[in-house]
Length: 370
Image 1 (spheres, rainbow, N blue to C red):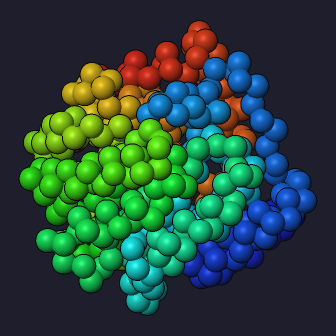
Image 2: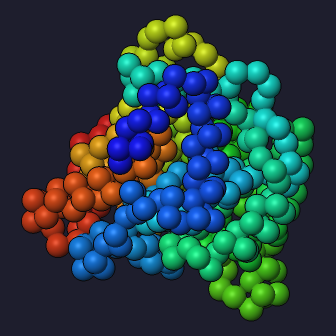
């Protein structure tokens, strides 16, 4: 831990994207040389602690996962799992490699515990990701999710072919696949959330998934949909109707927001998606709205603004069966997952729950509709 305290100020003094690349390079090295992780390696939780979750036909050793975006190309999954995450989601990945948006595209807002990014799905392509996960999968004992999207230059009318190509590439190595139609950083992508368009996209993925499952002799890989925090109630209800009709396994709520709730300062108006603490209430409203309307038929992975165990617990009580972190991990460092789990275990026990699933949705009515 002393080492991280030493390097943390150096990383925070750097350009945010450069600091991200250096941190990921360390985690990539630690995936090959596990001794590098010794100060932070998380001792596995006893399965009886009450934080394990079963969802989408999968068993998660604990309910705290890493959100997509930090390890887009799946370079450091063994190291990330060793830090204590109960599942790791990689991506967003596209069929063809692409550099993402040009110029400065990541900003810190430390006074708000937030980030703004307009990365634009920078990644090395679905085939390269699949090859990497195939190599590393035997050393990872937690579920791995793969978040898929379309290439920037693919017209919206042809988006389904991009998602199907991604699904075909990652299907053999993914425990679940996330259909990302909610990033604000690829032009036109959020338009794919419109009910008729989403229905066609999910129909194409449903057909592809059935073919792949038959070919591989496996059960169909769960498909999840990741939604934006900026939807109206009517839009959200339309999305839920499509997801229930199309055998979607669950919802990830939410992506980053284009709003700037209470955010001020020199970088507040930078273009892109806002994550971190200001996103917390927006995300919770969507989580609770989905939980109330689906009646538990669509398990929710709650993500957005989780900076502490109290935040994680609030999102679970709003209706999330599992939660993911990103910005909290960036600010909290490699010890963040272990601290979060230890504190969350205490909170669940404090309220008399034997298992975290008993807390899911108990305060959903506290959150108004988006």
